[in-house]
Amino acid sequence: MSVLVKRWLLLAVALFLSLNVSANATKAKSLIATELNKISELANKKELTVKEWTNYVEVVDTKCDIEKDSTIKKAYCEFYYEIYKASELFTDFSGGPGRDDCDRYLFSAENMTKNKTLKTDLRKIVEKLCAK
Amino acid sequence: MAEGSQCFSGTVVNQTFKRILENSPSPLVAEFRKLSKVKVSEGSLGCGSGLCDQTQQKQDPLRQILLTTKQIPKVCIDAALKRKISQSSIVCEANTDGTWKTPKNYRRLSGGTPCIDDTTSSYIQHITNKVISCFQGLPMKGGATENINPKVLYSKLNNESGFNFTFNSKGGVGAGQLTSIATQEMNILDPRRTGGRVVKGNGRYILENIISSTNPDCQELKPVIQDDLEKKRFSPRKNTCDWTSLETGLARNLIYSTGYFSHIKHDIIGKELRKRAPTAYADPEVLDLLALRAYWRGPGAALTAIRTMGMNSRSTASIKAQLKQNTYVKAVNNKLGEIRQLSGGACQY
Picture (cartoon, each protein chain N blue to C red):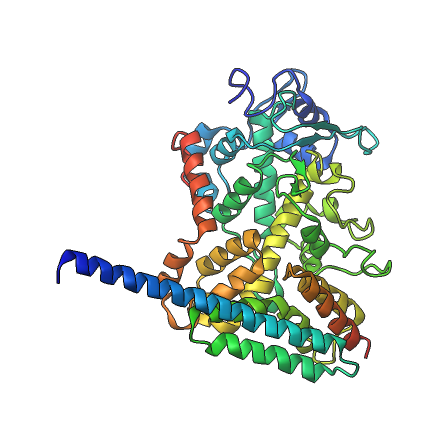
């Protein structure tokens, strides 16, 4: 194979990989946007339960675990760690969290994300579930 | 060194820190003076107990081992102080009744800041190593005990402030460049968040462990933080002298910033690493590398790395090799390269 052909082949492969990564980045963004919408729904749900919330976070954890594509996996894992503190609050204490625990974990949870809407939704969820 | 080789930074004309170190009745300063046998009348500090004389240290092999393994050598602090860091400063001095004189603020790279000289560097070393020693063996959550790697702490503080305890900006305050988030986690949450209630932060137990510690190196540090809960400290931007002064601020700042690093390392990163990759958790260097990454980029990036790097199915050697390629770890190592240069090779971190 001539040098020129090899070079073109290499370029084609590089372009394909780069387009693939770019496509997966777009897909990842879209997937996370869907998850953010789900969280907003949960935050605005009247009768949200602890089980519903912790189950949801567990599903995100599993997605982080099993996803094969590295770009999408990273997106799910980053998202999981933005929300996990608000779920750990309800799994770290066998008898349920006290009021101070709720304040502490919410503080940590809010500092795990820069997304203002997510911060607001996490606050709504924690306050709703802690009030019970 | 600036100003005719007498000052690492600042001007020889301004001897505020010399005055404090020679005269302050503050317990930590008085203890330092006693250990280094200050000659108040002659206006200079001598060296006693091998504290600041490198020749004396080299002649004592046991002390040299202790210094190289568990403590930060003075040559490394000297080199850090020589780095040109553009930051505004606040300089504080206590009145005889313990209140603060009106602090003096200096703009970035102002020529008028007080001289930070060899004696001030010795004091910085003394307090830093006291904090390191106090933290060794301190109980953490989940049954862990703290084991500070002096090189890791040095690289963190070198990166944050070059050990210049006067630095003060919105980005951070003092030697550890403390932020409001770190201070709240280490003491109490901002009462505006909690409807006025005093709610301890997630790392507050570390201060309580220091206060109840029987480690002799914690004894002189206890009074510095003893009343912090009662005084409701939650922001280093309030009463900034309490976070930047030689008398108490340097010690408090180092306790809080080391404590916050320990909290992130053990309570956030360590907790997840133990759960997801126990073999990697068993290697303290993996935890330190992840904690460094977490401290600068936020815990999320480091926690994500635990999952995306497949730490539960790789050798710790390969994990460490990859973690050391991280941009932030490389930036820290570059700064250590600068330190080796500034110290003429004497600081081997």
